[in-house]
Length: 188
Image (cartoon, rainbow, N blue to C red; front, side, top):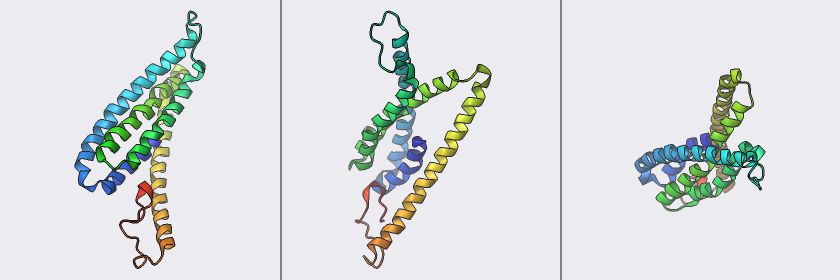
């Protein structure tokens, strides 16, 4: 669901923060999403398999901790590990640092959930129900992700209205362009 929110929010964010770079954003973002997402999903699956197998190998004296629940730990670790990179994306003053370091790093770390999640999902249901389980998960994720994007937009509008009310008479009730609140740029 975080990916939906990011995908829906970042084009507007980058257009506001770096208005002269909209074409570069479109091209670079496509590469970041495709390459970063692919590598993260593949690597997340590989690392999870290694983690799980470390507990099954009788020759292994010390299996990695949590090997029985690695399918669930890997997505959580990826989400936490992606936060610093997303903060770089939001707060970097340089367009290329924001996109090629922050966003690419976030995709490389945080998108590792897909392989382990699908493996756990398919392993948790009978073979005759795997298609339905994946379809139900995708429907739920798409709905929740779309709802998240809508709620972020609604929160941005409500916060902007609240800020204009709080700022009040500044500039005749209008916020100046330089009076922004954080990375959202709510007071444009």
